[in-house]
Length: 400
Image (cartoon, rainbow, N blue to C red; front, top):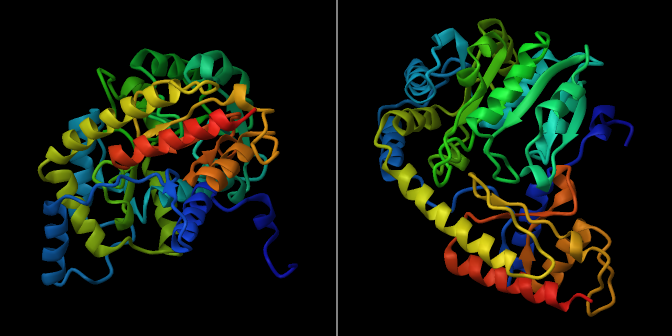
């Protein structure tokens, strides 16, 4: 339709949203479907956070706020960065947005010009390249592999940087793989970035608190203070506190960048939900018991899923350091045929046939920029995960 913007031709709808929507439609039609596509905790928002939101409503905190967030939430964010990441920020270096996605979008829209390049390691969260394209920039995809635990090397980063590089987007632990960079691995990457002063760092730390075993989370500006003045440290309450629907993301960085992001936000959504902001104040300042409980549950589920998938001939599933995803390889299943005669040419075929034949909804690897894989979100109960893995095993065994 010629009436629509040509910029829309460069992007696609979110594949993860599409999978979740399809699963819900099939369930509504009476199909027995297990949806493993949604990237959100299955736990309810903690009671103290819900109570803080209710109190805010009763106090009449239902009006517009400053576009970049209420002072109380900014103070809580500043305290969180100091307490947990040893990073110091002032209120004019902090922005609160309608979810973490808006933070990233604002930053890219505020900084990208035609010809600017943005380095994105693959596998990547599905929205990174499309947000770059909508901002007028050029995504530069750097492929990691299962052999490096889905983490890029310093040499790969170095070779991807050009005079046109404006941003390096970094996500650890990762969506979709759950892979986390150790402090030493991150320091090796920041050493490269220190040699290229034109490159800014956008670090998506949304899964900071969902880490397992003895993995230690670190963020780029914490590991390399020399990057402080060109790093946007992004986070939010969605994953850590089971608050996906509350839509509160935040970031801290250099004041001129934050000011530009606020200008864009003031002309788009204006302020995030006032009630959501007060809930987020309690999330960051209040008791943190929920985090340990959720982490323990996710680690148990990770171990269950990894063991079950690795027991299936043709599937190889690395053990992730964090988040609530696994990203198994199905390289040995490509080229096989279903009992109905349909050939599995790629991971999208695998995901499509798995949904049709066994009622298990997963996201195919090409959506995240690396094939042949698929992503499972194990943010659901143990019994459901066990049944899903049983169905996946049955489907894989049916291929010939």
